[in-house]
Image 1: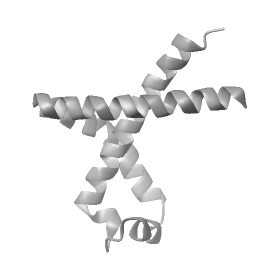
Image 2: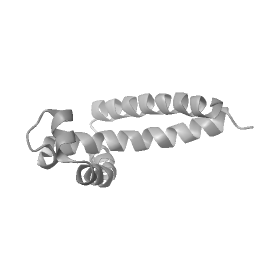
Image 3: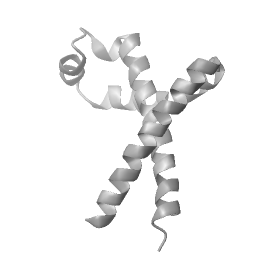
Amino acid sequence: MRLFLQFSACLALGVVVAALLLIGLMFCGQFGLIDGLLFTGKPLAQLSLAVLPEPFWVGLSGVADAPRNPSVQSFLALCAALGQVGMLLALGFMRLWYRA
C-alpha cells in the first residue's frame, strides 16, 4: 500500500511537471516538439477509441459520433502523451527519492 501511495504521488507530480513543460513549449514556440509529443500519444488514443464502445465516448464528451471526431481524437492523443511523459517522470522520481 505504501508503494502504491508513493507511486501515485510521484505520478501526480510527473503529470504536473509534464503539463508545465507543455506550457513552456507553447510559450517558446516549439510547436514541432509539441507535434512530436502528440504523435507519440496517437497510437494509444486510437486504441482506446477502437476498444471502448461508442456510447462511452459520446457520454464522456457529449459529441455525436465522438470516436470519429478529430477534436476528440486530438485531445485524447494529447492526454495520452502527457500521461506517458508523466509516467516516465514518475519512474524517475521514484528512483530518485525512494531508492532503498
